[in-house]
Length: 168
Image (cartoon, rainbow, N blue to C red):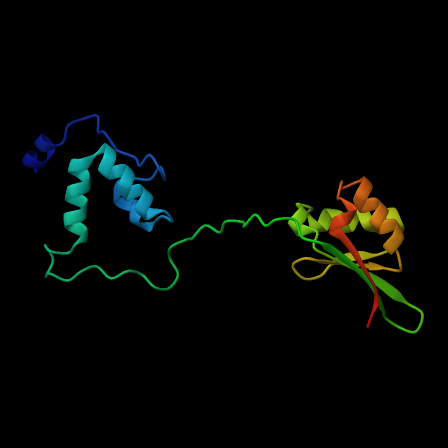
């Protein structure tokens, strides 16, 4: 036991990855392992060589380490920045006299749907709700006022707004 304590020098120096800020031994469980390996090879080549020889599995029976296939590794989802697409506005008849206005395409212009639905319900004094990934349903026929609001408040050019009229 005295031999083990003689090998350790205090204070301990711990190396942290410059890319993911974890210890290099734990980088393989992070989302960007290849970039972490590049950083480690550039900054600590001796540590990189020793870690890669351990990961190859040559010391343990010659079998290579299997990659995990299900769960475990958290992959960061990146939001794709899409070019602004046209916003479509259409009316749909619910019952005999009731209509709703359906608006799609606001997400591509950077508009948060819950906040927009709340603003629409306050502005038009009616109910509105977010349904689906990129769709807001507003109770009543408010297409003309909605187009004006989109142009004034959200600064959306009218070339990006398309009124489809009444659809079934």
